[in-house]
Image (cartoon, rainbow, N blue to C red; front, side, top):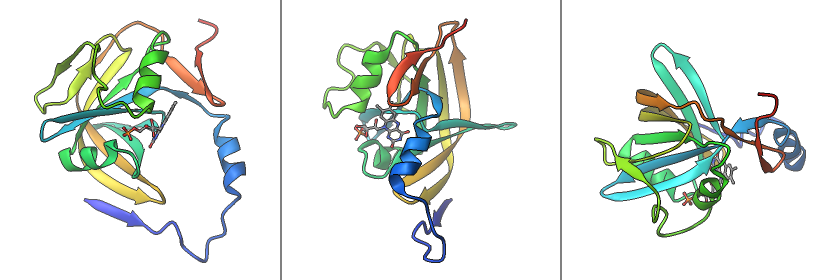
Length: 170
Ligand SMILES: Cc1cc2nc3c(=O)[nH]c(=O)nc-3n(C[C@H](O)[C@H](O)[C@H](O)COP(=O)(O)O)c2cc1C
């Protein structure tokens, strides 16, 4: 099901865009790479807009800009994999935030039953099937039922105020 929310609702005043972005930069987020595949085309992108939604049933959400190359592929395949990066995987975060054509060159991964690459050596993976899409402003929220997951004991990479950081105070 796809729900459309009209973000240009004229009766609703909204705050200054720059101030909003500045406030959001104070948030601390884990760094994920979202992978997907449609008709044999594998693709991935870095995303911090990720959250748990419900444990029963296991459900998460990701938020993708409609201008990304990943968006139409996630929308069409209705399957995606969330990878939580470890503190030593800044290179992976940068790679999947860029516009490479050979994104998976030199990367170790397996292919799951939906044809989607599952990258090795990350902190955690969540293999998801889209159950809802919500279009808001420039982005789409994809709500995914988690079909399978994995975790390791390595520490996650975090993103705060425009840069990658490690978790302090372990
Ligand atoms: C740390 C970081 C977090 C990001 N988080 C998101 C996000 O949550 N959603 C999004 O649409 N783009 C996000 N981006 C931007 C995308 O990674 C970037 O636009 C990427 O080039 C999209 O790739 P694609 O066009 O190949 O799909 C983020 C970038 C960085 C560096």
